[in-house]
Amino acid sequence: MTESEASVASSLDANYDSDAEISTIKSSLQDCLDNVKTAGSFATSGLLPDTTLSGLFVHNVGSIGFPLQEEQAKAIVGACHRAPFGQGDRTVVDESVRKTWQLNPDQFELRNPRWPSVVRKVTEQVAQEL
Image (tube, rainbow, N blue to C red; front, side):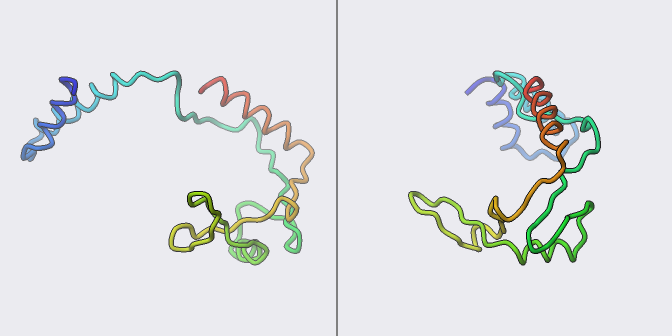
């Protein structure tokens, strides 16, 4: 355990009801984080290059507008099936673990012909920043 990690641990064990103790904990935590060595960032943010929408079209539902309206959300769910997940070597559906819905790729289309270009630009920008 490094000195800064020991400092955080001892600070957490103490009764930290004063601003000075909280400040010490924050400083120790920052020291620990500063010592983390990584090859790059784990997140990035920014504005999209333009406001091009994907042209989402769900079969048996129709074109989906944004912001998504409640009635459209319900219609999309009606076209979906429960999303399975991996559990060991099995694929299962268990709502107590994952309560999500999914569409198969053949159930929707992204109809805006400019959309692939937007995704490419965003992907290139994200790759540079990460």
